[in-house]
Length: 177
Image 1 (cartoon, helix red, strand yellow):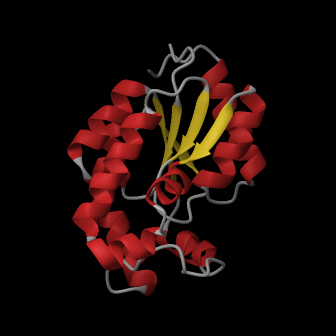
Image 2 (spheres, helix red, strand yellow):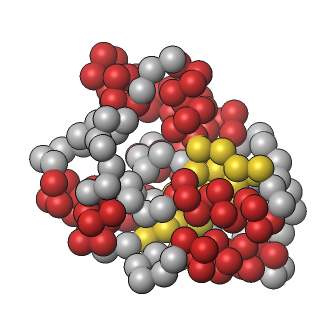
């Protein structure tokens, strides 16, 4: 049973984690938090700046520290960073600490959604463009699968419909945990 353990939304950029976390939390009457916001506030700079100034390893260390703290929250929906699953320890911690919902979409859908992102907050993670989205999906899919209790396809659904679907799954006995 989920009880009051946190619900973590995982998935690549553009999957809707932050929007849907807010909506799911409202339906459950819980708090919600964006892990990237917490990280940026805690360290006083954007994710892009951390990557540029300190490198990915330092960023992933900071991300793991924030995740460990968020795992102690109760009655909270957490929108994680898309790369939180890169480290095995994070995947294990997510799965053990709460209920993990993987938001999926195909590369074309994600790419279209990312066109609205100004790109100032997030670092490039590879070659850029749609090819980067495809590569991220290829590499991270097994990691998302490894820690997800529930997989939710986001293509063709409104954020409100997705939030309702997830909230109903959480409220209906939580037998997936």
